[in-house]
View 1 (spheres, rainbow, N blue to C red):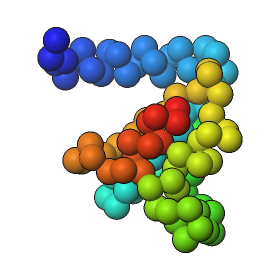
View 2: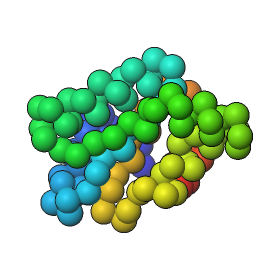
View 3: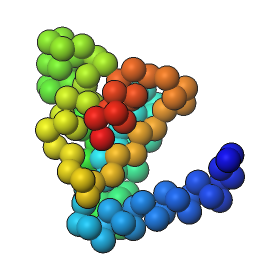
View 4: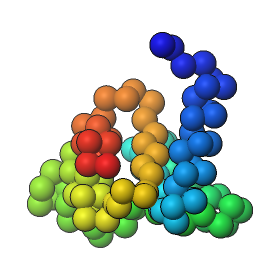
Length: 108
């Protein structure tokens, strides 16, 4: 079935509400311009909606992981150690093909 925009938004709202009800954290990731969107969205979740949120953007950690284990692992590696069953990952990608985003989705 092809999702219509309204269906996708309703599904997203439902997932966010379930995460909040379970006292989970919403992780938001993206690359390039999508990283900026992810950071802004995470800020809005935290400030405006008071929902616990993280972006995983720490320059020291990202460059360490990229250098030592590859850029494709900069999100999946921390998520494998942080994410819990009551948490939600929001992955923003224009192409939907970024290896680090796809690995993060698999990790979540």
